[in-house]
Amino acid sequence: MGATQTAQETSSPAAFETRVLESQLALLCRLSPAALRSGFFAGALIAWIVSSDNSLEALLAWLALLLAVTAGRLWLQGHYIRHAAQLDVKRWTNIILVGLAINGFIWAVPCIWLVPVDPARQTVLAILSIGIAATAIASLAPVRHAYATLLLPFMRKIDRILFAAT
Image (cartoon, rainbow, N blue to C red; front, side):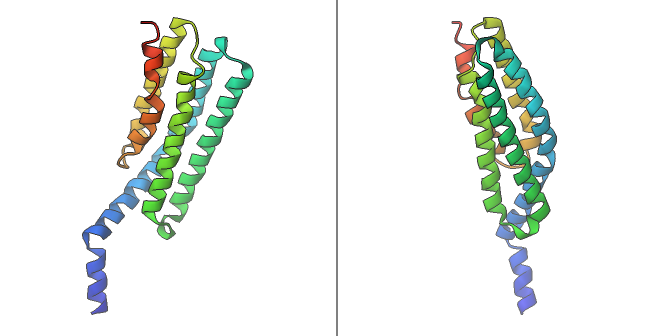
């Protein structure tokens, strides 16, 4: 009777959902490292774009914050991959989503506080920011709401750049 009960528990809809979420989160964690590493180089390009109107200290502080959040996300995702069998997948999904939201806010900083005065640089900043957000979907698609969690804080103030000249 115990074996039948265990088989029913593992074939229940909740158990199936948990296994699917485990696979989805593991896939996100395997896809994200390349995107996170290349994102730091995109951040350096953004820092160069906004450098004409901002102090070196502000740019370095933003890049350091971006690097710290990127390193934190890399560590969290690596930890999940290495220890997934012992971890609560729902809790870790929330942890990964919080990291994505923080990352989205960090990416929004140049579009809110470091906006260049030159309209041409503003346009390049907006296009690059939209491109970064668009490419994030490739690594974040496996987990429901992951892309929106990054995108909403990141793109919330992009209208400031796009419509500043009007």
